[in-house]
Image (tube, rainbow, N blue to C red; front, side, top):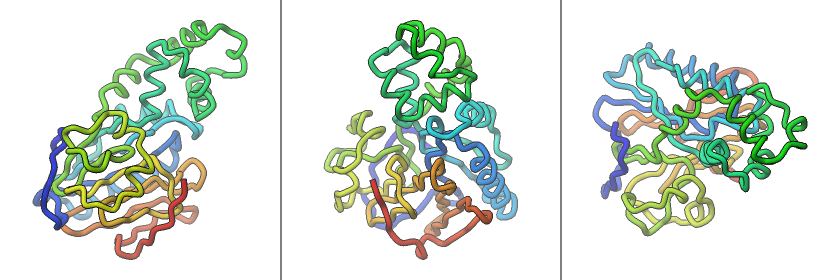
Length: 267
């Protein structure tokens, strides 16, 4: 697996020979869903014994759900049997890291959009911190988040190529070569990417934008199914020309060939 983007010009979609990948959508602090999904993925790998397997996390491990700190620690130390783990930077990781670096202007918006729950998972009460000056709040937050967590999150990639697929968090800017993509677009873009129907030269697998079901288009596949709210955490499996889903559900784990899935997205 190559951590540098590469633009494929073929229309057929395939993966590197005898190499399977699982792309995992936005976890957002949902530890129990993550544990169940990883157990199912590991069982598939043990059963099928692909020559090589990779598990790629598409970013936004943190915020909104109740166990961000625990998710980070789980994945920081994750060594899946028979596979390698890879991580992509999401916009929520970006903002948290900037806050930890002292960006006071982002602090209030981070707390509104999931940072409050993340602080609670690290043992801090945002309400009790609210009366302190912003700089003092950041000092308290920095003291609560282990350096090992900061270093882990800071080491995430922006994109990962995999055969005729490209894994990113949010998407790409249409019409711009993959190698020239702005970091901000890879982590934040929505409508210009989601509404564009052109062939990008590679099929983009992304999270970031929630959909009720996996959002399948001719040029992209969105797999953020809103785990923190829906209870469904999704992984997309790619092996040769075969594609299937592994998903949590209220009644267990579900597996579906991708051809059975229909679009149903919302912002």
